[in-house]
Image (tube, rainbow, N blue to C red; front, side, top):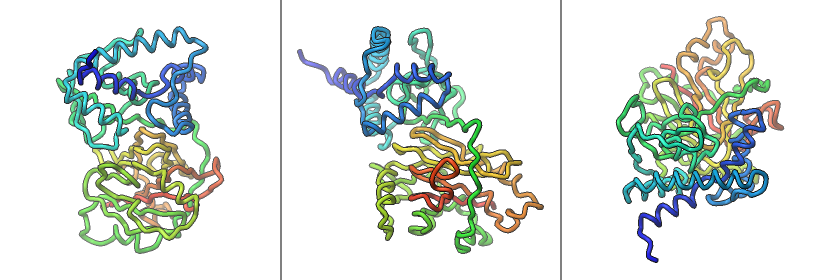
Length: 371
């Protein structure tokens, strides 16, 4: 029997679905419904098998029949949705899924009012496709954030909405209660770094980015003028700050290992409500920012951001409120409240062997222009 090109594309898309699904939901229920528990479990499994698509096939066992029934229902619903798409739309969706968001792919515009029923729940099409191809434990549209590269970004009630699952990210919920991480000293930052923001009349950039390997800065300061910046080690269609092109003299095996895991890296975006960081890599990143914490707190917290998640790493209004005249630290180092530290793969603080970010193998210092 001959297969049409459309049917071949649909079959390839179904084989490229995210692993897990039923297991994540069972683990989330067992964990008391914690929204991050299922994601963490899925992430852990992804690292065991290498994170490739089609790995970690669903296991049969406890609840095997129910799981098989849910799988069959999801398959029928997914095929019904995919068969509505044009051949060009299927090709674009397949390219996005197989590249895991590394390639620039067009929006998948579908009717905004079209919902699909799965079990007892109704899902908007963007949420359904995100469940199928990225996060099987996703339950509600409030858990995702649209990326600025998407045509539907910023539109409240469009007739057509983008359903490309890699044009959305998962919202990162801050840890509660957070562990008591400690403030790390910034006195080893060179004065020339801070002077970049002190030059009068220099308002063309909104931030500068420095890449560090442990206590050594590698490469030049990267001045950011565009609203969005990709920072990566290896990205198929990358355009931005490529860490893989920087010459590093560090011979540490750990540094080399972490460098190779940066992969697609992060996306740094200046939006209306602040600066967002989207983790595009296959490993967690760790972020510390003064605006992520309680203004009255005497310590800064380190927040873990899983792959595919976004977090508002910097808030301008909060940063200005932090510059209190009687605050000795801000008087001595006025850019402290306008700085974000991001470590790839390895965390720091009291819950880790590394107490300071300067001990992390690969990390970024993002200094915002406060003018």
